Length: 478
Image (cartoon, rainbow, N blue to C red; front, top):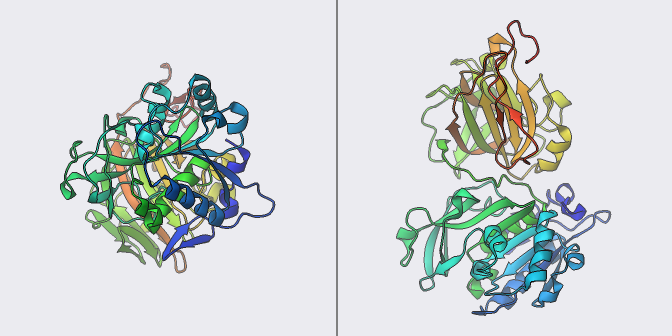
């Protein structure tokens, strides 16, 4: 990753106002931090959108207010290894057709593989059909579109910086693309189109319109919006675009691994199956649970978990305390979870074994990895808590930060409930989109060869043992 991409902690805690909309995570840069630099590329070899000048002006405006420098060009000669190294992300703004020659394509491939960022806007999907690398980076190619009309955008991921400011439904007018393929298996879908809300959709019930992914060493974000000139004056769309740019540059973190097969435990519509243990409560507003009072816990009574991946989005308002509990027996006493399960901490201000990503009181997170992956208070983060046998792994915004094995029979992870903590007065922590996926039970007897597994998104050189049983008597793993 480019050094200048690491501006998140320096700029992300302030607020940028555009019109009446507050955009999280932007501020004037600190004097001692190098600004990010963005290249907007808008060359066309096919249809040319009259909104391109508006788009360039909007990105420059976002940069002036948000602390990053913007250069704009239609000269493909800018695509050299030396020149691209100056930029933290390249925005393909409604490019069309074959816009780069072979050496320029090679330079851009190298740029992405060295950690560069890509932002594709609207007709970026109508570009470079004969270049497989670009097709994978963009995520999908354009197929057709109906006339410009209003539609409902259904927001799947409300933790990503490009969509966290939106509600679960986003009503807006644009030219809505149909794509030649569905990118869901390859990319992380941020938003889809409700085809019943407009005419001319051809992809059915699953019609992605915005997504992100980790691609060949770089970061990629795409939005199908942005055909109309009016889009670039729309505060919500500008915030959407800014969030995508911040993700692509590395100024904001997000889990952009493909996600399929999860079942919602809390989808924002209610708390059926959940039960409050102990004092305090959670309020429900804007499809979000927010802690109040305590010390208590909202736990999922409806189901015990065995081998599973638990994902949830969380946000601290400031210096707040909370945690996620796993592996505890059913009880109306929140201390039962403390004494019989494990807490994955959220508060980032405590000692290592009690800070964000730690297995509270037992094992610190990898603090270097944690610090790179963590968004600051006021911004959303995503946990994956993966429990297989007696092994517990914690991923923060898609980065593995803890790998813990239980050796205490009284705290067995092989079966138990999950819960979220309301820590006390003055602690305000919010949760969204709590979902779970059952995993195959993978166990081996002591002495058998270990099973190797690589988590999605992890480098191929990292192989992890899964489902190990502890040696009898609580000794070291074999």
